[in-house]
View 1 (cartoon, rainbow, N blue to C red):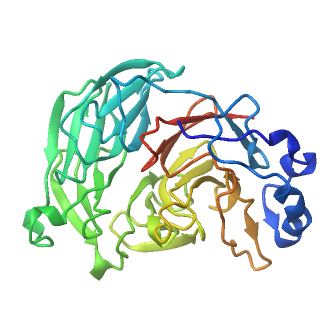
View 2 (view 1 turned 90 degrees about the vertical axis):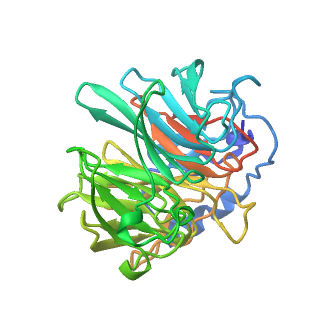
Length: 363
């Protein structure tokens, strides 16, 4: 699994125990020297003395060895995470020996399945009446698949040829699905032509929007969520990856707002309680593919209040967020995250040396 280092005890107390959730430039300058005094050496195993990560009320520590399995249950890229009503943690990987790996909360294998998703990427768990189902997007086979939790295929959606937006199938590379409570869902073509395809509850095509003509920037709509907690009507809240911002759209594709996250690379956004949690692939991606990532915690107004394994969020006097950076060498390329009912966080990583998910316990 990915590594963390153990210099937490060398942090000054006033750096770790920050009371204010947001940081001004003045606060940053007062504490920067103290933070810089603690150097983290990569490549050392996480221990009980792993550093405390994050700021303010959102501070965490790595749980060593969680979810590490044997050679007969390999992973490649760990792309998606979900939790079923039994409390199992479901991992999606693009290793065709076992595309779906199901853990218990202790990190032990419950079961595994799947050998037909070479480009497995996005994972969504949806409740339909009294059953739970999975939606899996595959970049290589250009399809969205719906299955039971144990792998029985229920339905699939291939490229939306009839729309005329695609000349051939391999232009369509769906990255994630977003689901409304009424059963409607949206497919983000995050690695293809940047369209968003809307299907009704019965799986029938309804509309397509976005793309270049709709103002959606290429290498943008990677993942996201239906946000029903905002003060406005339900909307699409999309992690725009390489564009370094979150994009809010109406359900019919109209741009409502943009939240800049400079220095980040938001690959997925999840909500838990009154907060949002964002996985950043790297702090200089794609210019530097060796750059390491971090997680952000945002409040109800989408202001960053903590960066986990990243620098403290700094807003200038005009309220503009300053560029964020990774700080502790804990993550490699966070791709998705899941916040459990006990406030712990699970992190799936892309291009991370075939490492299993990382679990963080809240301090």
